[in-house]
Image (cartoon, rainbow over all chains, first blue to last red; front, side):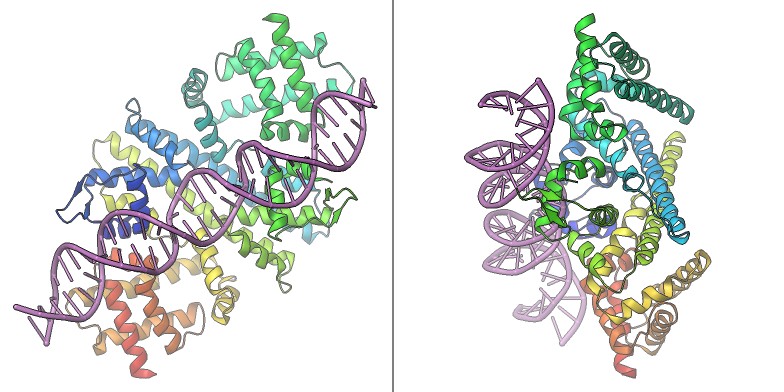
Length: 250
Length: 250
DNA sequence: TGCACAGCCTGACGTCGCGTCAGGGTCAAG
DNA sequence: CTTGACCCTGACGCGACGTCAGGCTGTGCA
C-alpha cells in the first residue's frame, strides 16, 4: 500500500506518515523505483501500535523505544494499553461525576469551593502521569520492579494501597498541625512507615532511594502540589522527615 | 492568591498561567504594587473552565471565545462538557473493548485484519472532531441550529439517526458497485434523501449548503477517509451525486 | 499517443502550548 | 541585613505536525 491509502485507512494525514518516517518511528519497509513509500502489513501493525500509544499521551520518542524494545512481546503491549485505558476510563468517569455534581449544586443554588472543583486536576496519577513516569524512570530497576508487581494487583488491592497511603499522609499532616518537628523521632517513624509501604507495594525502597524521593517532593511541582493540598507546608515537612529518617538509619 | 498558589491548587505550572495571561485567555483581575499577579475567586472559576475545555481537546483560542461568549450561561458550559465527556467515555470503552478483542484473538491464535484494527481510528466523530467542527463552523446558523436540536436527542435517537445514515451510505455504495452513474436519476434521488435526512435530523440543509457539503467530502481528508473506507471511490461518487442533485433542483 | 489530473516526492517555514533559561526585583524569616 | 523562596519580563527551544512550493509519477480517456 502507498501512503495515501494507509493514511485513509488509519485516519491520519499523509504528512503524519512522512513525519513518522523522518523521525524513524515508522519507516515503510519498501520503496518503488520512483521513490514511492510502500507499506507492508507488518508496517500497518506497527502503525496501529503507534496510534494507540500516541492517543494515550506518550511522546513519539518514547513510543519508538517501547516498540523497539526487544524484550517486550506483543502481549505486554496489549496489557499495558489495557491498563492505561482503564485508568483513562476511571478518570473520565470521575470528571463526568464532577460535572454532574456541579450541575446539582447549581440547581440547588449552592456553589462548590475551588478546592472541590480542582480536585481532579491536582491529585491524579493518570495516563499522562504514567507516560511521564515511564519516560523519566524507564531505565531504572525500581520502575521495572514496580511494573512487574503492580501488574498483578486487583482493583481491591489498589483501594487498599491508596487507603494505606492516605492514612500515613493524614498522620503526617496531624503531626505537622500539632507542631511536632519534622526531624523528631515521631516524624521519622512515620517516614519509616512510608518507606516500608513503598517497599511492600511497589519496589525495594532503600534509604538512599527514599531520601531521593524526599528531595523530589520539593523539586517536582506535581508532588509538591499533592502534599500542599493536604496541608500547607506538608511537602517540606514530609521531605525533611524522610531525609532525616534516611540519615538516622543509613 | 498569587500565581504559585493558584498553580499548586490547579495542578498547572506557573509558566502556564503566564502564558494564559499573555494570550488574554485568563488575566488575573489584579496586580500588587510590585507587579505580582493577584487571582480572585472569579479568576479561579474561569481557570477551572479553561482546564476542562483544554482537557477535552479544544485549542485555547476556541476556549477563549467559548468563555467570552456573552450568550452562553454557565449551565450551557456544563451541559456541553457533560456531552463531550460522555463521548470520550464511549470512545475509551470502545478502545478497551478493542484491546480485549485483540487479546482474545491472540489467545486463540488468530489475528485481526487491518480494517478491524483501525476501525476506531478512522470513523469516529468524537471529542476532538467536535472541537474542530465547532471551531470551523462556530459562527454559522446551521451549526447553532444543529446544536439546539441535537441537545434534546436521546441515545435511542442517535442510534436511529446513525442507522439511517448508514443505510443511505450503503445504498450509495451499492449503486456505485452496480455501475450506476453518479449523475443519474437514481444517484440523485439518493442524494436528495441524504439532504432530507440532514434537514430532519440536524439543520435546514438547502441545496446550496448540500452542494457545499458535497465539495467538502472531497476536500476534507477526514470525510474522504470515511467514505473511502466504505468503498473506494465512494467519496467522489457521493460528492458528484450531491452536486448533480443540487444543480437539478436549485 | 498525448495530456490532464490525481497522487507522490523533498525541502522549508509556520503554529500551538507551553518548557526552560537568563537577568533582575520582592518579601518574610531569622 | 542577608538569605532563600517567590515573582517579574523577555527570549529562545521543542514536539508534532500543518501548509505551501516546486517538481516527478502514473493512469484513464480522448
